[in-house]
Image (cartoon, rainbow, N blue to C red):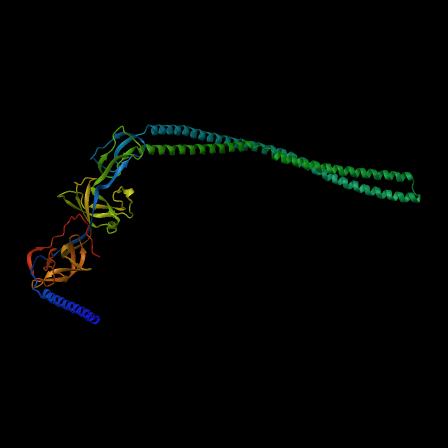
Amino acid sequence: MSSLDYQAKKAYQVGMRWLTGAFILASVSLGGVWGYDWIKNRPLTPTSAELVEVELDNVENKISAGGTVELGGQRTIKSPEEGAVDRVLIKQGDRISSGQELIILRNPQRETILNKKQLEIQRQEIIVERNREKIEEAQQKLKTAQVDYEQDLEDYQQELASKQAIQNLEIDKIQAQINRNRQKLEEAKANLEAAEAELENSEKLLERGFIAQQETDRQKQTVRESQASLRDAELELKNSKIELETAQVRELEIQASVDSSPIFEAEINLQEAQSVLKQSQSELERLKIEYQEETLTLENNIVTAPIDGVILNINVKPGDGVNRSDELMTLGDPNQELIQLQLSTLDAAQVKPNQQARISVIGPNTEVFTGRVQSIGLQARSPSSNNNESSGQATVPATIQLDQPTKTLIPGSAVSVEIVLEERNNVVVLNTELIQRDGQSPYVWIIDSNNTAQKQPITLGLEGLIQVEVTSGLEAGDRVISPSPDTPLEPGIPITEASSTPTESNPQSSPRRNRRRR
């Protein structure tokens, strides 16, 4: 076979394969179009489904938690001091009043200390009394010294008046002598001047030869005698002045001769006695304060009731030794019953005071009690602080107060608590299994007037555990199809009613929490 024949044959085979493939593709396409049209337009097989009539009901958003029963004001009374239990004045279950004596403790060491303090106070009171007597004695001595001084002063003033009169006379005499000596001095000066003048005349006459030398010598002797008389007059005047000053100093000595030192000594002794009394009184006050403190300490040995209530438990008996802060008993007010909770931080963020709560004892067929949230903690507690180490999560304490005391709940027992965060009353509700979702859009299947299934978009409100509020899209009396997981629904599919039941009522004690749809 030539090469041309071979190539022609090869091309023919390729062309046939292409034609065959195109034919097969066209056949498949036509078959698919025909099959789709057949499926689309085939008559739908009727489906049996349960129909639920929409009704008005209540829906709640709530959380559940476990709690522990307590009485109002429940507390554990601890020992105020170290000692021994002397008497227990109550028994378990007794009703008590505030201030009532419950337990009496005994502390011999403290009693001994108190007796010693009392003896010290008595001794110090004697010391204080003796110091008061010393002050009285010092005051009497001061008074006596003042009287003696006044008497001495009076006597001295009389003596001084007499001596002063004599001294004044002596001074006057000396003063007169001084005056006389001054006159003598003046006379001596005048005599000296006259003698000197006479001597000068005599010397002139001697030079002229009118008188003899002896006459001049006698005149010189007269001058010398006048000079001596002048010196004597000056000395006498000086001596008389000295006598005057001496007399005046003697007068000052006479005036300062009364002794007042006994008064000063008595005043000093009185001040010292007053100071000692003040110190002893301060010491007495200190001892009395210590005695009062010891008395209060012994009074602490009498344990009294802080509130009206009932005794729940007694941990000690007479003769038991106790340390400070040892637990003695537990008491509480039965007129108030509380539930202590430990909530997760997520739940605690939604709880507010005065929210409604339902309380029930854990177990079957239990009675439900009502209460309200009394308080919610402001700080979360770590697992180590609340002994909740098993959860490993921080919790927030909360307290529920029952509306009325049950008289049946046992303090310390575990209970189940539901806290109603939010509720809607008399609204359109549906069970959650009836609601379908197309992405984020909720809808339900309803049956139309032709008894075929149709999608009905709805708007949800408050969402509970098994029921949800429907705010739009449905009304009371509408019938909703309960879809079966085995038979998917399609719009327009004929529905055969299997049964019709109303929506379930809202349960009051769900073990799980309800959440509101955001």
